[in-house]
Length: 468
Image (tube, rainbow, N blue to C red; front, side, top):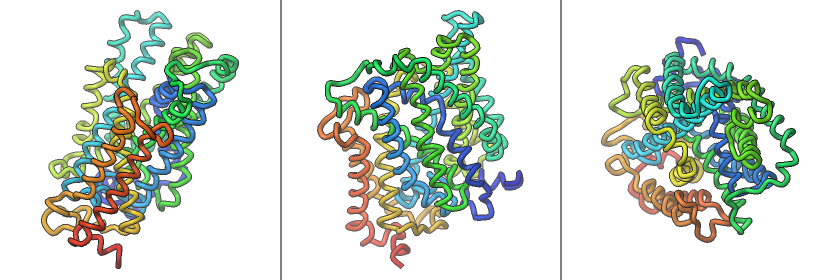
């Protein structure tokens, strides 16, 4: 894509075939760099609370592949075929006012993901500085705050170039993410092989099925959380089929493989931070190498997250004509605020944040899957997506689709019934089904039933187009 085409991507309008110039390789690189953030270690850490190494690896891979499949079915057919992002693709389900619900979900989730990245990176910098004698332990928190602020400034500067900035950064960071990531995994597994065999989880239940399903659940919701990023990235792919393999490998498989590092480190060394345990394995040099990786794994997803949020905000009426730099600023200031003001408090609530992802994004993905494949047969009025007001195709009732609202509420309630996102207390049959999969199933069924019984007979939602 030429620099002159950059404004097309940042405009938020649909991308035509001529606007899409990403090859399969470029798509793979961006998805890989986006998936392999520092949150991988925290995901591995939480799985390590409930499962040993062998079972944990199995749960990470199985859950990630399930989550990736759901995410692909929800986003790829519409975003890639019509060149629209996740937010725009939600208007046919939620209505030309109700879609603002998805803007909030995207905004809140990306703030959470990026804040986690910043705090993790700041902690890694502090760890290396303390190890090298450049700082005292009581300087750790100020270091986190300074690093968060500086990283946000770097992200802002890079993204002033828009998509070209994201693309160039991804190409550079991919080498660090893949190369050093594999090196770290080798160092940990080769140096701690015997300890991993006997290592036991610290919070495991007596119910083995519950432990395994919880590991799978953590992995599923981790992938569903990428809904906020995914549409903005895959809409650059030329065809839906060209994005399937990159998505499954670069995101669905790469994330659990990197999470294995956090899983193993937590089981053996009781710390998921690679800068901490690599120092214990190989001294300060290893810690510095790990710090470079953490920096690369922090910057790539942060760029993708802020870029996706800015594209999503473009659809908000009051911000439709805002300069690109303003949208970036609105996307990054809340992240910086969390990283500077409440880093420790937010970092300690990662498990609850993951459950929040499942509570909302599992029903959301199911609604989009049901709408695309069961009701609309992947036929969309793209012009109608960008029309508002009375008489527009996706007006429904006052801009809201009651089928989507009822489905979201039903999926939300189902999830909360099965799993408490704060305490992780559960009810039957969670230990066999997870919480996110039943929540998705209930939301999808409710959406189809209410649409066919109530919405379609009133001629709302432009469903007649899919029947022609």
